Length: 109
Image (cartoon, rainbow, N blue to C red; front, side, top):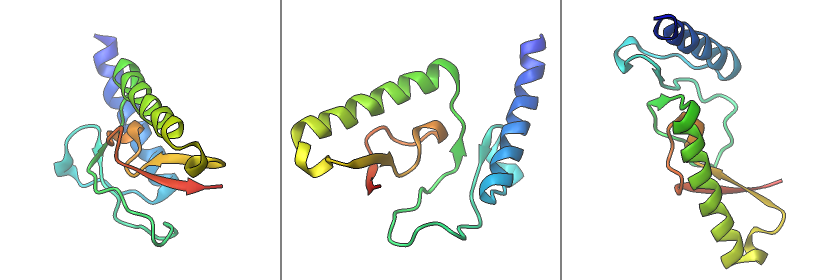
């Protein structure tokens, strides 16, 4: 149906947007909806790089993953408030791109 036809177009659009923003190039053998990063120019040194391949999560799948990550982050903050005061907690591979909800790096801003 129309939803099935629209999904590949939406995935192609998302890939193009990511490529334009962060210099991403996805080899064709990764499968529909997956991409990898070849050019890490501008990525902060000393910060772990996600390994990929990446897949954009959407809808209920993303909402469930984001909720799990938010709960894990809240538990970290409750367990050691001083350690995380004034810091943002980020996943090494963002949950939006199929990353773990508990594999994270702490970045202070």
